[in-house]
Length: 351
Image 1 (spheres, helix red, strand yellow):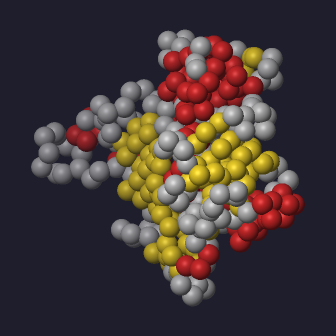
Image 2 (tube, rainbow, N blue to C red):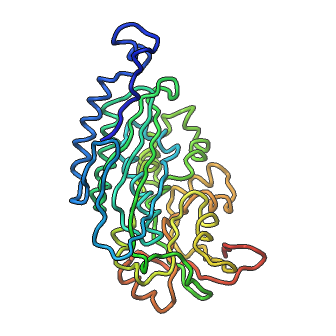
């Protein structure tokens, strides 16, 4: 179902069958890893998966009148560095799936299938198995098939146990059910759904604030306000909103996933021209990790709201008449703002 390493050219410089291994790429080890990954991935297959071992995976799309395919691709960023230092790599597998599922959910799409890309200097079977176990778990929880991917051994590109992880997802939504924000208007309410922490953004800043690269032992420090170690807090998995949001989608005008860029970078993406979001600080609880980062790093509050989700992982825009219905479906949802006409070009204001 995946290519585990680039095939060696028999005419490349080297002697005997071990030349590629001496160059840093072990095809036999890669084949063993590939077989293990394939077995794990097969547990996610739905009846619509026709082939997942050829040069391209095949998926049969059926049961829709006017299907609109929605695709997305993303990475986990430097959260991978924390996972590598902690020797805990399963939660980043969950992260990459949930991040991608949440992104296409903003269009009203349900996930169909997922592919991953993992690259490292030297394939570590245990490390890859942990990542894939997280991916498989997250895929199964939303009924998404892991149909393929690439596991690349790239000596000289990565150091030690560092690696890169990217995910690609395809989902579908009926054309009549597409959510694109076009009906949003002044007076509509903004609801927020709580995040589980940093999710997958802002980790380069966090690493600098705590000087993690220079002293990884700080990840083991337990902070009373967190109730656990810094490393455990930073590896908390990115929350998936699809299962809880799905029944409420017909009541919703717009959905914004609060990822890189925070509120300022994401909410305007769903707003019609001339409109803005006014958010009310204090209308939701900010998790302790954000306060800790802000104080330790002496970071301006405005920058915190531009870099991090600050405790809100997903925002929903709906008419005021639908708020009660949505909250009955989503008890964790809180009114955190409203839609107003933009003034001086500002698309997001906070008071």
